[in-house]
Image 1 (cartoon, rainbow, N blue to C red):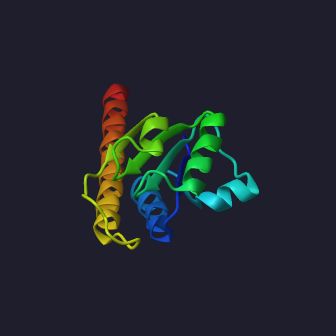
Image 2 (image 1 turned 90 degrees about the vertical axis):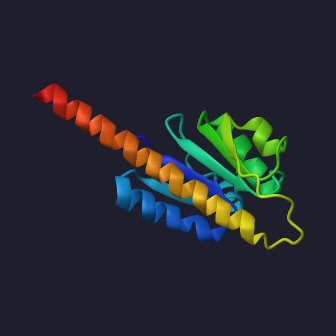
Length: 140
């Protein structure tokens, strides 16, 4: 089974590991971007790495993105800024379109990022359910 690495700069996204693992049984590793780089954490070709940044220009997250790309992972970006470095360098992504943020503590962006994660987990659940039904049908 494919391992899905989550690389981000916000501690609150650690819930995604619990939600994804408990809901769909897919192993998820949450990494703080700077920690991943400091310890040269394992990222493989089979991994999907999700990078979260409000501005899309967070330095630690960009360096972690480069590291994941060098290791051949599928890279997904979640950002609030169209045309940002993360949006340009990932394989695919989600633009959350929360509007401009005045302060560093961007509550609406954080809430929308959480919404995107819930939908990614939901989509993965539907995909796995569909695979299960197809396998079950073929066995009959």
